[in-house]
Length: 244
Image (cartoon, rainbow, N blue to C red; front, side, top):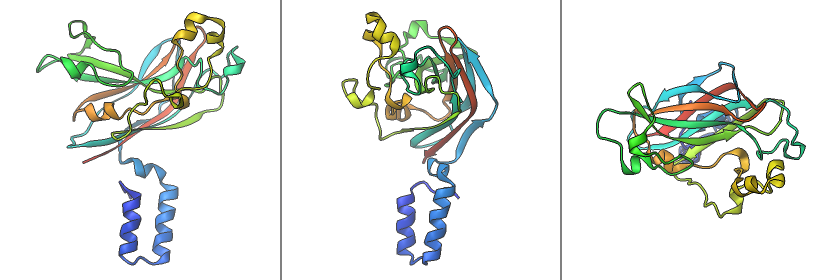
C-alpha cells in the first residue's frame, strides 16, 4: 500500500468511523513500511561498488511524466574506507572526502541551454553555455551534493535524503547548516580553513532543485572519493518520488 499523506489517511479513517482494530492495522502498516511515505520506487540498485580516489556513476534513471514533482527521496547504504589519521573527525561529516553527488543531464537537441537552465540553485557549479560538458548528445546541467559518508566509520550506514519542493537550502550564514568546528586539516592549514564548510548530516535540503526538474530529465547518482586512500563504497541506492 502506498499513501502519499499519512495525516490525511488517518483523518479519513477517523471520518469513516474506522474501528480501533482498523486504526491499529494502519499504524502497523506505517511502522513496517516507512519507505511508502516517500512514494513509489523510480529506480534502484543493490550492486556492490567501490571507488578509490576517483568517481563512478552508480545509478542512472529518468524521471517519470509528471505535472508537479513534490519530492525525491534517496535511500542509500554506504561507507568510506573505515580509517583515517584524523581521529578527531571520526564519525562526523567533517574532512570526509567520500561522498555521493547527483548529476542532471539533458538532451542537446532543441533550444540552446541558457539562463536558469544552467544556473540552478543548490551546490551545482555554474556552467558556461559555450563550455558545456557534452557526451552522447546530452549535456550536464550541474552536479549537486547528495550525501557524504561518515568519516572513518567501518560499519555500513543507512541514509534517507529527501529533497522536498517545500524545503530549501539554508542560507550559508545559518549556523544550523554546518557541522561545528573545522576538520583536522582545517585546524592545521589556514587556506583550508577558509574554504571548509561541512554540511550537518552530510547533506542539505534542495527544494529548488526539485522545483526546476522536468519530466524525462536524466539523473545520475555518482560515487566520489578524492585524495590519498579515500574510498567510497555503496551497497544499495533506491530512489522514490511523489508527484501529480
